[in-house]
Length: 155
Image 1 (cartoon, rainbow, N blue to C red):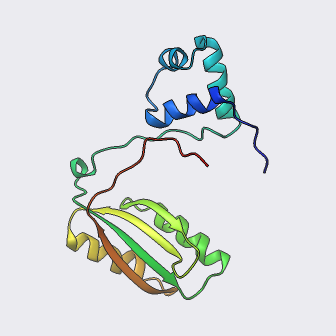
Image 2 (image 1 turned 180 degrees about the vertical axis):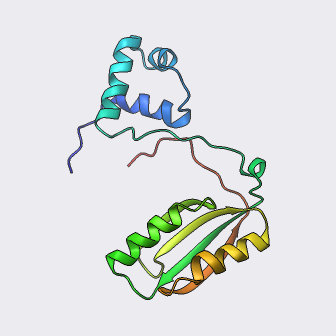
């Protein structure tokens, strides 16, 4: 799928929104030296072209009772499309799951979770992961700190 080329102004707008999606159009326009109407048109075009896919709210997970974060590595014994798609839908819908990665290599999934305590983590792994017949290996690693970059990736 071919995407349109982004110019320096588009990239500057994206960088600002990536750093803080709450910025208002007037402030963005001022920082990229555009009229607010032109800036808004560019943002709408970035959205219409599926370059801006949405925005997310970040919250303090501990305020919600998420005292422990973990990464759960999962290896499957069956790799058919139906199994993979079904597990992605099932796990991604669970309230404990923050991120779900379908991987290549020796792992099939990496599941990033937030739970209240170690008993909750144990029960989650037993009830939602190892209880599935196609799962043949699981490893759980605690997350000490989770940082999210606010710098637009340069690829």
